[in-house]
Length: 403
Image (cartoon, rainbow, N blue to C red; front, side):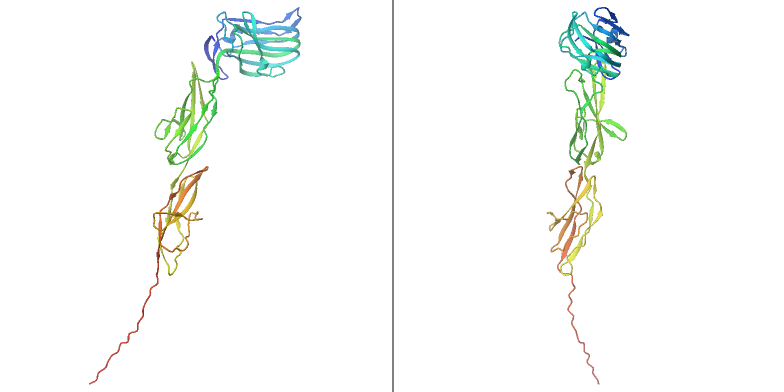
C-alpha cells in the first residue's frame, strides 16, 4: 500500500498516514425527490484526515430532519495506483453526542474504485453507534476485500432522524503499530537452592499481525538499592538481552533479588517501550548448620545414659530449619536416628562408644535443601568406673626385753 509520513498518535500508537491526493465532501440538507429536509447537516475538512496534524479531523454531522436522506459523507482518495485488496486500513475515529432515530439509518465506511462502490462496512460493526453516548477516540481496523481508490465515511437514513452527533476522523492510516506493547507473560517469583539455577521469562505479544511491534529487543535488570541496573552476561547471568534470563551458580547473596525486563521496539521514527512486572528470587540455603555440645564419658557399671546434647550455636537458614540427628560407632558411617528431629537430642543408654551429629536443612516455598551437618560429639563408654579396694589388717608387735 502506498504510504507517506509517520505519525505518533496522542492516544497511543504509531502509523503511516494513507497517501492521498484527493478529498471530497457532501452534506445533503434539502432535496425535493426523494424528499429530504435536515437541519445542521455538515460535512467538512476531509483533507484533514490524512494531514500530519494528528489532532485535526474531518467532520460529518448528520443533523436532524425527515425524509429519504443520503449522500452525506467525507472522503479521501488517490488518482494514482489503487490501494490493494485485503490490506488493513486504520481509521482514527471518535464520535460525540448521541443518536435517537425513528428511522432506518446507517453510518458506513464505503470504498470505491473508479467511482463504483466495491466494499462497505458499518461503523456500528465496530462499536455501538445508534442510541449510544460519546465514543472515545480509537482505532478502527477495516479490511476491504477489493482494490479501491477512494474511501468515505457516509451517513444515510429513511424516516425521522433526531441525531445530535459529530463523527470525526482524525487520521486514516495505511499501517499502524500499537503502543504500549503488551506482555503475553510476565516474570514470576522463583525459589532455588544455593548453587542452583533458574530462569525468568517475559514475552512481548508479537503474534504476527499488521499491528505487531517490530524489532523487539529485551534488557534484563536487577534492583540495586533503589536503582535498576542493566545486567551483563557473566558467570551468574546469561541471555540478558533475550525474553528468558538464565540465572546460574546462584550464591546465597542473591536471596531477595528483584528482576524485571525492559522491552523496546522501533518502527521508523516511532519507538515503544514496555517494562515488565517484577520477579523475585529466593535463595534457599543453610548458611551455617550451627554447633552442638559436648563430648562426654559414661560408665557401663554406673550409668551409660548420656546427658542431652545442647545447641551452642543456632543453625542459620533462609527458610524453615528441619533437623535430623545421626549416630555412628566409627565416626565414618552415620545413620539417621528415628524420630530424632528436634534441635536438641537426648540419646538413650549406649553399649559402646558412639559419635553423634546433627543434620540441618532449609525449606522455603516448597524448595528443600540437602542436609548440612554440625560438628560431631563423642560419647565414650567405660566398662567400669568404680574403685575396687582390698583392705588388709596387719598386726605390728613389739617385743620387750629386760635386763
